Image (cartoon, rainbow, N blue to C red; front, side, top):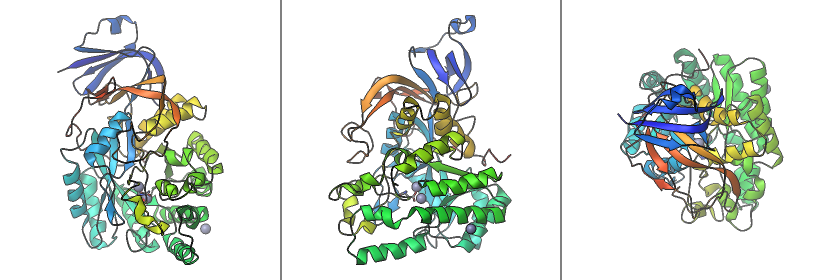
Length: 466
Ligand code: URP
Ligand code: ZN
Ligand code: ZN
Ligand code: ZN
């Protein structure tokens, strides 16, 4: 087996920072020792990577992506191949994507379809959550079988009536099943019934521009749904995980539940930390590039979200990567913002944008690794195989240059989408080398991996509940 030695870096995990050498044998980390120590000096390897001046961090775990996802008559632009390769470029070595049950179909059919899309195509390791679009006796029964296959979390929607939407009774039943089986319910918390009324009223008034997407998907309708989801979970005595939280008022609901000692968890996404309704209101149709749900909020929400990341009321930062090209996809909504496919590209930029939060003093280095690697791995049953650097862990390791600067652009990114949400923005810090299960897949500005390197990861249930 190939032995790789990473010398002289600053190893950062959620728990520690230490100047250490890391020894990798085959696919696993086998040892860490202080750089320059007698023990580390004695190690030999086939490949030695010099990490002087660099951070040595766990590969990122992005617990929320949508590769080749059908939405609104089109499909997200990244395939499992292009999207996972872009993830690797950005220092993410595991994604958890969403398999989708279609209306009237079974969970099994949905999961099999997503396995078929991903298998043999991924650059990095991957796992699945299951979107339960049709809560009924038989899909509830199927949830248990899926947990046995390593698919241990289930997303429900309070938004998108007629597509993915579940009413409160269905949500309660799914939560009860979660309480019974250990499955974690993930909630898209927006009051979709009220939003649809506001969409209709806006369009009737001729308010068709992208910025109205943000107005009709009101922050209070996110807060209300978040509140309702948490109360339903409390009644069911089930844990709940709120996805893509963007509004300060929704965060307050999560905070209150957590202060009461309840198992409510939430993620936010880089776009809510760095972008705002100002982007949605860009001139012409440009704002369509920033249409996602939950929507971007006025900039004053950002401080509340960063604070939530510090207090752990927000435990995870995922991307909700769901890219649609500006030309040929986003433009389906010219003249009607409700027809703009919802979603933003981001799988490649998450680690860098969160590191920018470190540079700007908003979070510590260890917290960066906690919210981007360790907590998502624990939340979704992948830890300590993923999310840390420790003997026995998968050798998913990133050498990160904290001093390098980069300017983000669609011209240089690797996601299969024709724009960047951060075009022209400079950040400090850059991935220099990426190991995925011991193999160097990115190094010196070159991609060295191949489709099919990544393997399906069976997950255990949420590790915060034991
Ligand atoms: O706008 C978004 N978030 N698109 C992806 C689907 C979802 O609701 O997560
Ligand atoms: Zn969602
Ligand atoms: Zn209430
Ligand atoms: Zn999503």
